[in-house]
Length: 279
Image (tube, rainbow, N blue to C red; front, side, top):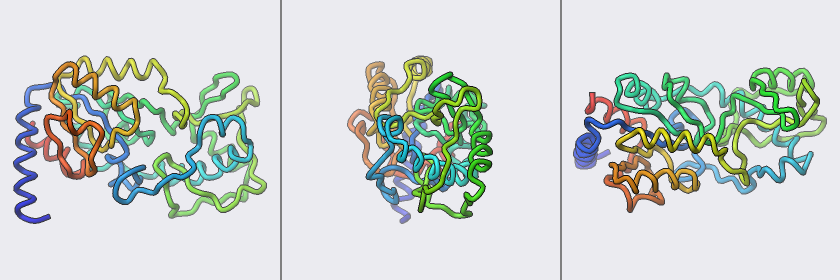
C-alpha cells in the first residue's frame, strides 16, 4: 500500500469513527470476514466459483448427489473446523465486551464469531456445528455425525490440506462405496443445519436479526457483497431508520449507493483500527 493510500485509509477510518462514536453498532458480516482465516469467499478476488451449488431440491431428491455432498462435506468440515478466528473477529468480540457493538448478524456458517468470543451472534444461514434429522427433528453435534461417518466408512481419509469451499466442503475424488449417515434415533435423513440454495432463512432467525438491528443506532456491513437478499433486506431496514451505514468490503456491493461511507479494504485491517479509534 502506498503512503498516499495509507493516508487516505486513515482519513476514511477517522471519518467512520466520527459517524460511529457514542452509538451502539450492529454488524452484518459475510464470507469476506473469514478469508483471512483460510475460508474462501464466494465472490470477489480469490473466490472459487461454484457452478453447481447444492440446492435443497437436489439434496432431498437425488441420493447420489446427497452421497457426494456428505463425502465432500465431511472432508471439508475437518479442515473448516480447524480454522481460527482472525483479528476482525476478535476486534468485534472485544468491542461487544466494551459495549460498543450490540451484536453480530452473520451470513457465515463457520462459527468463528462465537469462537472469537462474541456472545450475541445471529447465524441467519445456520451453522455447520449442528446436523438435523428431517424426519423426527433430532439435533446432533456435527462431531458425533463425523464419528458415525468414519465408523461406517473406515476407508475415508482426511487430507491435511484440502481445497476448501465457503460452505465447508470439498469436491471429493470418488463417492463409490460411501455410506450416508442417518439419524440414530429414527433412521431418518440428516441435513446440516445450514440454509441451502432454494431454502428461505427461518423466520425466527430473521426476526431476531431485525430485533438486534432495531436496538442499534448504526450498522456496519463487513465482508459481504450483499448479493443474498436477506442481507439487503436488513440494510434496507437500517436505511429507513436513517442510521449511519458503513460498508467495509474489498469489492463493490449492492448497497454502496445507500452507505454513508464505503471502505474498500480488508476487514482484518479495518475492524481492529476502528476498535482502537473508538476505544
